[in-house]
Length: 168
Image 1 (cartoon, rainbow, N blue to C red):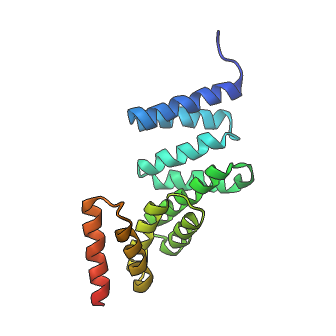
Image 2 (cartoon, rainbow, N blue to C red):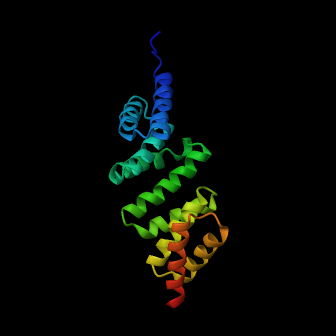
Image 3 (cartoon, one colour):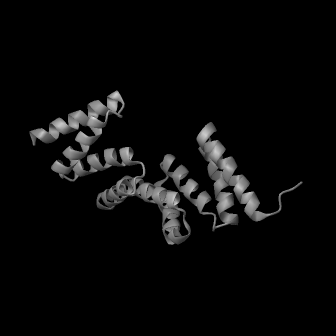
């Protein structure tokens, strides 16, 4: 039986796209599906958010920024988890587009919201270092190092950064 209901088609498309992204690592196929779902149902915030995430994973920051602009306009209709992911993706995008002050604010907000806290702290610590906010960067790095949840290579990098801060 053919699926005729647009909403149901959107749900199926979103599920298929998630499968492609999360289990098969086929981002291009997922993007094609998500773009079609988004075009046929612009109220599908789940598709829009996943599309923005996939664009970011593909380093297509212009397209990510465009989707995030649309999503910011739809904030009222987003679920709590979607709002949190929107903030984190915004931070990544600001950082990629070299908008450091905006990225710093968004990473702080992501941490305050309890979303992707470890990742946001790492990125925030590095951005603060780049902005010569050494004391705050050092504190964040200390929290990350003492948490014990870092991979050995990442731990070594952050310890080196902390040592550099202490020399300044």
